[in-house]
Every structure is written in structure tokens, then in C-alpha cells.
Length: 525
Image (cartoon, rainbow, N blue to C red; front, side, top):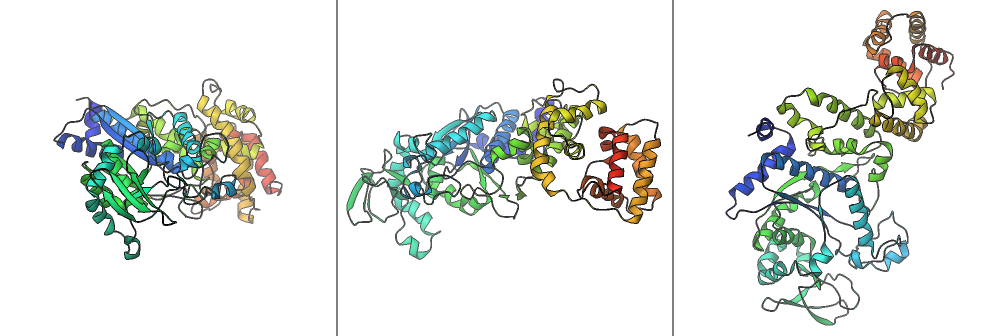
């Protein structure tokens, strides 16, 4: 066993913990498998959002962790529930009136309001696949519509007919009396209107695999459960899919957690073995509300990628998946800088430390070198004080600070400089609020300007930080963070900021002296 595999078998990183659970499941199975199947589900009722990406990214992290501790091949299926009836029209798509005319039809039978695909479900599936392909995920895409219509689901559907009473017994325990009176695990697709019907089932013919029901107008119909004529209610569908595909692992949000025993039991009734599962906490918007595909609140996939590289999003997804996280614009700079901190640490770490480092899981062990010699937060502040409108301006400062750096040698820094300009213009600049210094603060700022102007020693981060630190101490700031807060609020228009010595080294000593003069003269606000 390699040193890293040994470290992985002991690692407390959550992907390795989950991978070991999957391995234990496979090793304890009485019927050996030739591969391990990971699955993620997607409800294409609206445009894909970051939560969708997070599910695939996190499952991929567990899959790659499993491949370290086992030689058994793996597969990942991304399953789209595109046969679900459209129960409401998403608020963030065009042609609202047209879509209302197709309510209750399977999403793959609803016309595409964007006019680019053969259906609304097809459009949203394409959006999902485009995004997953952009990130280089290794997956197989499954459409529920194709799964039902092609016959791949027939065996389990016929078994659901045979064991109808057993599956119904599981479901009825979870339903209110009123709903239980009309509930059936089967939802027929109306042969004429094409709508998904929520109607009582009058008879289930287990021998021939048929169901009989009355539609909303009282007309009786008998349909085979196979061939896409009928779909399962969503909770039975979960368990039935696990049984049909022989799924080994699936993760889902906390909102599904109370249904897990139902999914598991139905899977077992239909002849399957319940998979391992992982429940993650939900993402919240700026108001602390759950993000939703239909509302379009929270950050979209494309919005994050407008302001930061994809690896920072993967880093955000890795962090504490069992803790609810606020997913808003201000998390982006922190994610970028922490990701690069971990990249820089990785080469000097032991196998045990590397197994616990998020970047191993983001890059499946093939960890690149960070060329970010200037933190993203520092680039934002530089954009602020320099008034830079393009990344070339920022490079003028960067090259003075790090002469060996260049867009070609430091592509991640070059990309980040462009992102910093966009982020500053859209989010930092509109919220900047400068204030005038108090008498004590003004005296300290004048002293700092004088000392910087007279400074003829080294201009590295540490030397300049010590100088700034000494001024704050000499002027009685206690705690010293009040001194740094003064610098940020008076000179940068923000309540927090970068390590100030590093900022001076990057922006320039004389430029900082001029900035302080402007702050003292009230010229910044």
C-alpha cells in the first residue's frame, strides 16, 4: 500500500470518510460488483444553480477519494428528472403565458421558452451538461424521459405492480389522511392531453402490468406501466431508481433527509440494496433564505465565474458541507485567497496533510502550483486606490512589487487581475464609504506619511508592516486593530482590508504618502 493510500485510509477529510463507507458497503456485499456507481439527481424545473454544481463536485470528490483507496472501477451518473410535470412556472424565464398553458406536462413535453431546444426540459438539461462539461466532470447523463420510454425502467415498474401494496404501505404511513385517500405511487400520463395526472388508481393488474384510472373528466383509461405511459411519484421514484440502477452512493440536501428511510425501504422492496447517502446543508442567499432554481435567488453558476476562477468555487463547495453556508458575492474574494493559500502549502506537506488539504480533492491529486504572488483581496484594494479600469494598469504595480512576474508566467494572477477589476467596479466601488479621521487618527496618519516619506530602507512587506505597526503603537492605539481599521476606513473606504505593509509595498511608498495626504485633506470621499 502506498504512503498516500495509507494516509487516505486514516484521513478525516470528509471525502475519504465517505469513500471508506462506500468501500465497506462493496466489500460486505454478497454479490460482488464490477464497478461502483455514484449518482446525482437534478430536477430541471428551472435553470441549474450553484447547488446543482455543488452536488456533482462533492460527489466527484468522494469518487476520486474512493479510487485512491480501492482499485474497483467507478461510474458517475447525473440523472435528470425531466419527466416530472411542470407544477409551476419559474419566475426567471421568458414566455410566462405560454408556459402556463403547459402546466402539469412533463418538462420534456413543454416547449422551450428560449426557442433553442426541443423542450424546456431539454434546454435545462443542455444547460446542466454545458456547465458540467466546462468543469471537466467525468459523468454519464441520464434522462428520466428516456429511461422510462426506452424500457430500462420496465423491470422495476413491473415489480412495483407486483409489490404495489407493500410500496403503498410505506408511503401511506408518511401521508396525511386526506392525501392518503387518493394517493397512488403511479402517475399516468394522459394519452390525449399529455399531462401528468394525480388521480386515484382504480385497479393495478400485477399480472399484465396495467393500471386503470379515471381522468379528471371521469373517463376511464387502462394503461401499461411500462414504455413511458406512467411515471412514479417522486419519493417512490427515488427508491425505484436506486434499485433499477444498483446505485451505491447518492448525496442530497438536508430537505430530503426525513425521506431517506422511505427511499431506502422502497428500494429494498423493489429488489435493490439501499445505497450509502450523504446529506449536505443548504445554501442561503444574502437574506439567509434557501436558494431556489425557480426564484433565481443566490448566485448563479455564470455569475461566480464572472468574478473568479472555477477552482475557487470548488474550494467553496469543499468547505464544511454539513454546515449551511451563505452564498453571496462577498464570499468570492475569501474563497480565491484561501484556495491559493492551500495550493502554496501543498508541496511541503506530508501525505497525511495532503490528504486533508482541500486542493487535493479539488484537483484529484494533480495539484497545480500557485502563481498568485499578490492576493485577490490586495488586487481589489489596488484597483480601488489606483482607479484602474483594466488589468494592464494593475500589472504596472504588480511588476514593481514582483519584477519576475508576468501574464505569461503567472496566468492565474493575470486572470485574477481581470476578475478584480470587474469585481471592484460591480461590488466594491458602489459601497465605498470614506470617513474623516479623528484628531488622534489624523496625527498618526501624518506621522505615518512622514516616516514613509523619509524611509530609505527595504520596501518589502515585513519591513513596511513593522513601520506601520510602530506608528500605531507609538500613538497609543490599543488594540492595534483599531489603527488598521482607521487606515482602511479613511484611506480605502472599507471597514477591513489587506495587510497594510503588503499594500504599501504593492502600491508604492510615495504613492501611499500621496494617498494619506488626500485622506487627511478630505479628497477621497
